[in-house]
Length: 278
Image 1: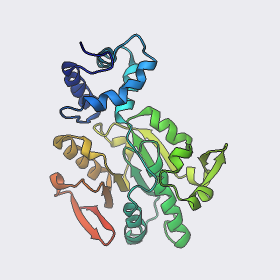
Image 2: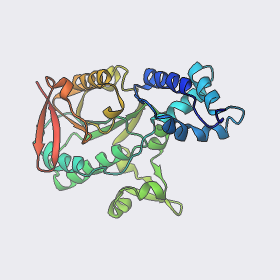
Image 3: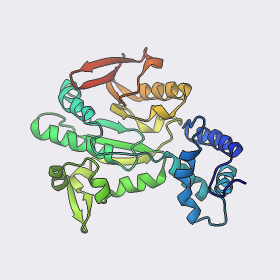
């Protein structure tokens, strides 16, 4: 007999179809363990349901709150401050210095931003760049973070992080420079950093028409979760919202192979990124 804390094979297949339809995330075969680990915690609030029953109720969609919590649990991914380091080095040493001076505000998009660490890391990097280059970016800049999960966006908007989150890559010098203490073990983003960063809900499979035009897009460690067709669709939409000299940064294992006609690879000593083809 199947445990109430296990996912049956038929329900797993139904859930895979549901998750891809709603979010674009492709689970693949034999990832029941992942679904189980992500959703088990919800049973504390739905004690009358088995894990199979929880999944079935989420798929039916009558309880929108439950459905959203299930989707949040499956789409919330690990995030770090200044993840992998090299994208931020590229930003400082290569991308920003090479940008043509403009009278308009520089706009950067952090796609699938989770709880906001990447978006704030980008903003801190640019503020440091401005401090060293006072004549650069005179019209200012803004960073827009987007995610499909309402829960992580609430965390990102608050800009409050506990000790565990802080220890995941936030340099000590930045803790005092860009954050205020909030209690014994937490920090909150200072206003002079927060004013440059905003967040909005977006499903990467939806149209991006409301996002506006961006000069730089970070879409890192996201495409690996999508099917080949959806990867192509997302990259096409990103290209459409990039400015003519716009730059795209992807994760180390991701590429623009399927849309090579839209992007040109730029190799640098610290890594690589992509420029939109005009």
